[in-house]
Amino acid sequence: MDMGRIVQFLPHISMVSANGSHFYRLAYETVELGAYHIRILCDVEAVHDASYELLRFQPVELSPDVPAKAGFNSAVTRGFYRSESYFVSEGEQTRIEYSLQLHADLPTPIALKVVPGSVLNKIAQNITNWRIKEIAGGFIEGSIAYFPQWLHENQFRIS
Figure 1 (cartoon, helix red, strand yellow):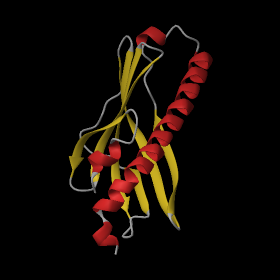
Figure 2 (cartoon, one colour; figure 1 turned 30 degrees about the vertical axis):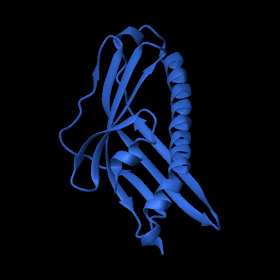
Figure 3 (cartoon, one colour; figure 1 turned 90 degrees about the vertical axis):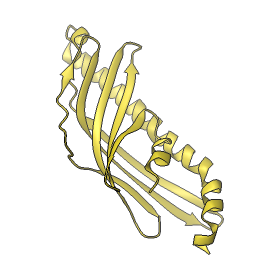
């Protein structure tokens, strides 16, 4: 599995390391509200079926651990990433069904400790919803754009 190629279709997500052929540490990194640096490290196992119709990333816990840490305008922690991609043949076309979950308990950056918890939670939820849609949309668009090249590269294996 070409994890580097897959991750390039996921906005804000990069591969930090590989542990064997199916275990990876991914990093979700963004700057929110123009000032707050967020980094969530997620360990995943990549699973795909023999016909390449399903690609799943499921959470696992690899070493080393990632202790939660908050700075003045930053937060780092371990999170849990899960996604499933189904590639469904529909004649001359392929439909992609994609689901994504990203969960983390972020420590509050020091600069945000003065913001009431309910306000901070609402802002965080809105940003999370927006980012999840952005990541899912980026994966689907990237997969669709890459599909003709993949088909060309794999034409002899498909026949």
